[in-house]
Amino acid sequence: MNNRTGILLMIAAIAAFAVQDALSRLLAGNYNTLMVVMIRYWVFAAFVITLALRRPEGLRAALRSRRPIAQALRATLLVVEICVMVYAYTLIGLINAHAVFAVCPLIVVALSGPILGEKLTWQRWATVGVGLIGVLIILRPGQGVFTWPALLPLITALFFAAYSVLTRLTARDEAFFPSFFWPAFLGAIMMTALGLPQWQSIQPQDWPIFAAYACISILSNWLLQKTYEKAEASAVQPFAYLHFVFIAGIGVAFFDESLAVPVVIGAALIIAAGLYSLWQTRPNAKASL
Image (cartoon, rainbow, N blue to C red):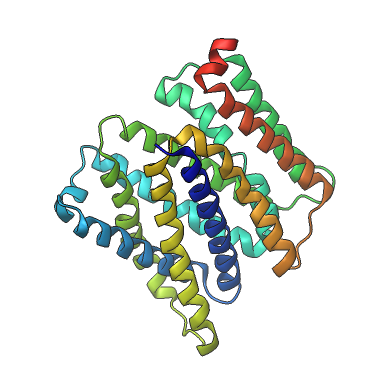
């Protein structure tokens, strides 16, 4: 394991995912959201099928699963999460959407106790509470600024947290690659059924944007895969919170979005709570308590 290389790859992967989100917002502003997500899934599925065909075990091994129902549920959760999140970008913008979505790792913590049987200390429950306070600061219910679309990224955070917990559950007796393959493969099938009826003619000037969208989708997933091949997950996971930093920069620079003070304060609370929760999982942190 080379954690230094892994950290650099993680930062590059997170930057690529931020650009992918920005292109999603741009394209979904002009085309149907389901069509945009469908194209994203086509590229993702082509990527994993290519990887499967290059592996010694072949495509059949990638399709072999001990938990097909759980894998189908994971794929469904991810499809819903991505579609709702991209739609949220078009309604409330990248910055506001990701500020709320940052609470997702803390929801994973809350679900890991009852579903995975993990023992949660009072400190980790406290981080969940702090994260929820951060969400309330961002949403500001009762102050005349709350609108229903602001709930969409919170819903996607719940769906992605459930997807993440199911991923950890299936990882107990499932090889890595089938768990990587199934969401892309099944997701492409589901999104084709949903998105193809919504197909719109692509304007000539938008083809380069769709091409860039396809390329960045492949690059982001490839970088993330290489990250976990090179480094321990605990070493690189804290850098995932750079996603909000990159998104904030893109939103301000290219989409004329603004960073409202409550959003900054709320996001800072959520990220700080998430980082502390990650620190709590380290062996040396547990030993010092």
